[in-house]
Length: 262
Image 1 (cartoon, rainbow, N blue to C red):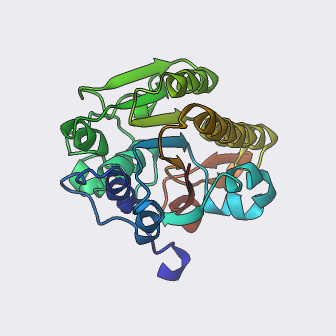
Image 2 (image 1 turned 60 degrees about the horizontal axis):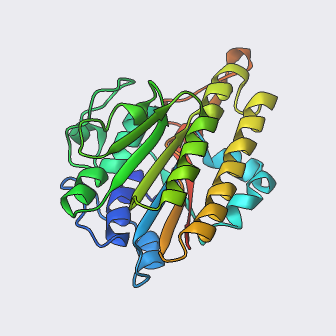
């Protein structure tokens, strides 16, 4: 049964991001992911841009690989990862950006308290760097990392979030930009992971990532950037042609990240 789950863990992302920027990892973070650390080692990375589309499962990538072509063309590595239980948004993003398991960072259900555990954002702030989060209101990424000395751009729609992120790229003052899009997850719950509206939302996510890559190449010419396409958990179909997630099953636990140095 264990062979059904990706061996590399989401807990390794936080230390890998900090290592790329030459910053000490969060206090409770798992060790970095070797292949991601090797990608950034010696590259002089001074910017990280993390695009966080919700609920993009590894099986979706495997079944609809052609749809992801613009992402793969803007990726040096394709990184299958195992997320954490319960495989729901606040639990998984808390893990992604603290590097800690749910038992340590404290979110163990679909709740959105402010995470007190040391995070990537805290690590960067201590090092004198400037992180920010761009997200839609009432979503996990707009709530669980509040109360830090950093900037938050909370908007109403994924399109507005992406527009704001493009503005921030042009401003060129943040060392880490995290952009959350929940449109695929929202559609998937209503029409299923492979429903037409859900696939359209996924295409929108792919296009957004491609646009961010282009903007970074055009505007951050004086920097070396680690760009990531980094979902939190997967998804599966349930009765009524709807979608869900949160279970210890490969469809929910196995995700795929893409990273590129620009």
